[in-house]
Length: 192
Image (tube, rainbow, N blue to C red; front, side, top):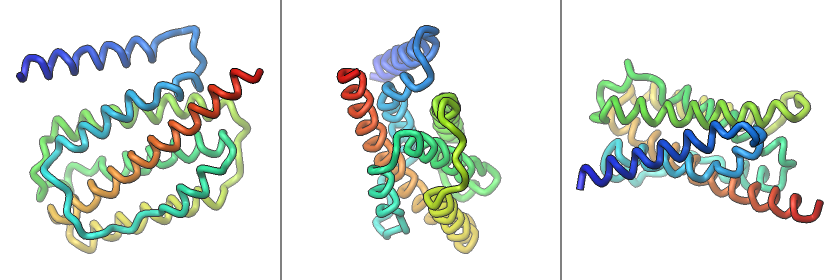
C-alpha cells in the first residue's frame, strides 16, 4: 500500500514538474492547471493530523463572494496574496512545538504553496499593477486576526488546529475561484 502511494505521489510530482516546465505555455496558462497543485496542497494539509476541531473560526466568505465577480486580474492578485498570507501564517516552526504535525509534511505543504504563489505571481505580472484595493486590506486584516488568535492562545495545539481548519477553507474556496476562472478563460478563448 505504501509503495503504491509513493508511486502515485512520484507520478504526481513528475506530472506537475512537466506541466510547469513546458516552455510554450504562458504564465497564465499555468493558472488552468491550478487544480492539480491545489489538490496536492489540500492532501498535505489533511495528512498533518486527524480531523479539525469543530469550533468556528472567522472566515471572510463575503470577500470570496465579492472576488467571484471581480476582474480576472484582481482574482489572480487575490489568489497570490492569499497564498502568500497562508505561507506567512504557516511558516512558523518555532511556534509549532505544541502541535504534533510531521515537520516534513509541513515543509512539503509550504513548498507546494510557494510553487503555486511563484507561478501565480508570474501570471499577475502580466497585468497592470493595481493600487491597494479594498480586498487586499480585508484579506490582510483577516490574517492579522488569525495571527492574534494564535498568539492569544499561546500557539497551543488547539489554536494551530483551528488555523489548519481555516487554511483548509481558504484553499478549498480558492480552488473554486480558480476553477471558475479556468471556465472563464476557456470560454474567452473559444469566442476569440
